Structure formats: structure tokens, C-alpha cells
Image (cartoon, one colour):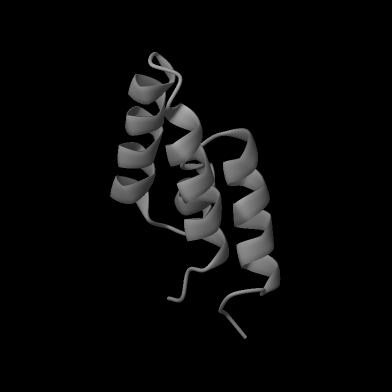
Length: 65
């Protein structure tokens, strides 16, 4: 069972909670993880990184391979 709410996605969402993109990296989506990490880092300079941070968490939780 791999879909929203599965154990792997919950762990990935928790990882993305701490570091944006880490959950996607755990799921094997390397390029997407890198893009989210860099985008969040750039936007945190303008205090808008929380948007990408939340997007990263939701994306990891809802991933379907």
C-alpha cells in the first residue's frame, strides 16, 4: 500500500517538516527535492519560505508512485 496516508509518506512528510525537500529525497524524487530546497532557501530571505515549506510537506504526504 503506497499512497496518501501510507507509512512511507508519513515519514516523508515529517522529514519535509524539518527540512523542505527531504521527504521528496526519501521518496527518490531527487530533482524535485533539490528544487524545493533551493526555492525555500531563497524565499526565506523574503519571509515567504513557509509557503514552499508547507508545499513540500503536503507534496510528500500526498505522493503516489
